[in-house]
Each structure stands twice: as C-alpha cells, then as structure tokens.
Image (tube, rainbow, N blue to C red; front, side):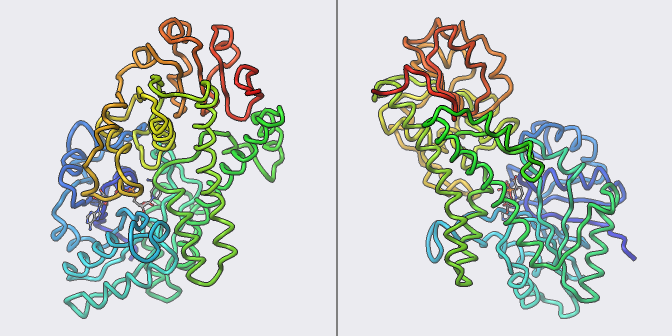
Length: 481
Ligand code: NAI
C-alpha cells in the first residue's frame, strides 16, 4: 500500500522547517520529525520564537507541533523509524579545492547519507529536497548501499526539489504551482514515486504533481533558478541602458510584460538579486556544464551572475559619484539589509556588497532592517564570501567594520545626521514613512538612492531630496558634466 507512517527530515532550515510543517499540518496521520545537528536551531523550533521569520509560519507550526510535528536532534531514533527521509541540508558553493567558487559542496549531503546508512534497519525512501547537481542521486545511492550494515535494507532515491520562495514560503507550500518528483524508471522506483505522491495528494491537486525521471527533476530545479535569475539580470541590464538614454525601466517592463509570451512577473529592476540560491545554483549549473565539456553553455549562464555583480557595483558608483565623488566620513542610512522583503535572511543579500563598496570608500553605514539582528549584519559584513553557509562558520569580525557600521533600531534615527538614504530591501513599511521629517534631520543636500524603486520619487523631490531611482531618467543634479 501507499501508506507512509513516519517521515523524518534531515536539516531544519529555511526549507526543512516550513516544508515539513506544512506536510504535518495537511497529513495529521503521518508523524513528521525534523532533525538537525544544530542544537540551538532545534531548541528555537521548539520555542515560541522560531529560528526563521516567514509570514504564516507560526500559525502552521503552532497548530501541528506536539501533535504530529516534532523537532529533534535524536537522529538515530527517528531516522531508524522513518519510512521516508527527506534530506534538506545546505549545499553551499565550495570555498576551496577543485571547483572552488562554483561547484556545490556536498559534504553535508554525504554526511547525511552516511548517517542514514548507519542507522537503517528497514528499507527507506530517501528524498533529495536540497538543490543538488545533476546525478547526485547516483552518488548518494552508492554511499547508502555500501555503508549500510544490513544487506536486506534497500534504499530508493527520489528527487523532490523545493520551489518555495522565502517570504511567501507558506503560501507556496500550501498552493504550489507544481510539485516535482523524480524517480528511477524501475518497478521499485515507480512504487516509491507513488508513495511520495500519496503524501502530497493530501492537499495538492493531481494535475499539479509531476513525475519525471531522476535527472530531469534535479536539472529542472537548477534550470528554474537559472531562468528566474536570468530574468532579473536581463531587466537590470536594460535599467542601465534606460539611465543612459532617458527611458524608464518600469515603463519598458510594463510594455514587454503585456506580451503573453513574456508575462508581467519578475520584471522589476533592482539593485540585484540575492538569497542563498540563485547565484549558488547558477554557479553549480555552470560547473556541471563544464564538467561535461559544454564550455559555451557554461559561459552563457555565467553572464547572469556577472550582470548581477555589475548591477551592485553600478549602484555603489552612482551613490559615490552622485555625492560629489566622495563618501569619506559621510553617514549613509541603509534601509533594508535582508535580501528581500518579508524575510530575515541575509544570505548573499546585495546589501552586503553595496555596504562593502561604500565602506571601502570611507563611508559610515547606519543600517536599519525590521527583521535582521545587528550581530547578523556585522557577521555578514566581515565574513569571507560563501562562509555564511557553514553551520559552524565564521565568527571573526574585523574592527574597522565594527567602527564604521552602526545597526539602528528605527528608520528615523537611522536617517538622522545622514547625507543619504539607500533603499536596499523593498520592505512595505518604507513606503509609509514620514520622509519630510527625515529630510529635516539630514545633512543637505540630502539624497535618496532607491535601489528597489518603491518610493514616491516625485513626492521626495518636492520635499527637497535629490533622488536616484534605478533605471529611471536621471535627476539633473546627478548628471556629471
Ligand atoms: P539552511 O542552511 O537554512 O538549513 C540546512 C540545515 O541543515 C542547517 O540547519 C544545518 O545545520 C543542517 N545540517 C547540515 N548537515 C546536517 C547533518 N548531517 N545532519 C543534520 N543536519 C544537518 O538551508 P536551506 O535554506 O534550508 O536550504 C537547504 C537546501 O534547500 C539547499 O540545497 C538549498 O539550495 C535548497 N533550497 C533552498 C531554498 C530557500 O529558499 N532557502 C528554496 C529551495 C531550495
């Protein structure tokens, strides 16, 4: 039969936590246990203050926790008892060795597989939830079968990549565009696919559950992220051209978005994409292409990352050149540090590169974000690239960063005494602030650099601000003769 009694998930992060909470809520008869090696994270999942911020997450967790949803560090017991094991560990970019800066570091994934092999006394379905390079399932199968103590135990590997977006995770999980499950085209592979499908069928309509072979599922996830990021880089490339020609990127996006082949979503110009996935997954895709000899394909996708770096750099240059080619000693208010609104996640946030660029030119950054803790900002600004994704990562901070960065707990004191405000995250609350009041407390000329195009630029100009908006006709004040 298709019945699943117990699900375990290795990795209680942004994906493991919310996705398992929704399964538990929708399937009250299945016991769901989320596991992590990070004790603090598990403690937080079991407390009133969850370790991640996501709209609607508390309601789901509080409804199911203690009923059929559990968070634990006891991997031996729960992995041993589960019929289905999701693996949702981090798969960061390698920092050193072969493929450094591009390839996926599968250390955590392999560690999880070895853990499963060591404790399994009955056959299991192992589900790849993490985003992994194509053909990872094959490697994982080898680790599992060669390490398992009991020869009668069989493992069936499925790929079930997660498409949720942070900030809308709960609605994405509750009403997914699609659920993708890849499996082996064998009788046992087919049976495993049907079992996992049965779980999702509790709340996802049949026509939204897609079943493919393993490699298609793995590659579909990398491709989806590459195409999404490519859309952002494409519109960002056009934003630079708009500024040079007097076109308005919002008007261009609106006009092209009405073409049903293009569609209106994800065409908003910005200071650049961030988040733990887009860059990592494209680099990973490039590396996979290179490994199979497809250099041209790899080069093609790499430009999406290069354009994103250019956009962040271009923003920093606009700020500096706009402020008379020097920001040395000037206080700059940074509005928003998270990589997008409605999340406290700062992994690969463009705010890191923008702040670093400004700090390198001697600016003092005052940072306000409604969801990011000061310690996180300091850690991000002083950590080497890609170090954030190590559970026991980076703690050292550089003194000059501590001296030049101030975390501020409200936007008005953040702006006070500043020469400029840079909007780096599109938090809704930034739209409703009293900018006239801030203007009065700032050094003149006072600037706004809107890296998300969310403010009312005409109203700001009336107050007296010099305004830069991405991809919009330039304020004459900002045009250097
Ligand atoms: P995360 O870093 O928030 O969570 C991963 C967790 O796994 C950490 O808490 C870590 O302590 C734990 N872990 C690592 N090795 C372990 C082991 N051997 N045993 C037990 N726990 C272990 O990462 P996140 O964001 O949840 O991402 C996980 C995967 O999902 C990545 O591959 C990512 O690319 C993918 N993904 C992420 C999305 C996102 O929006 N964050 C969306 C879709 C996919």
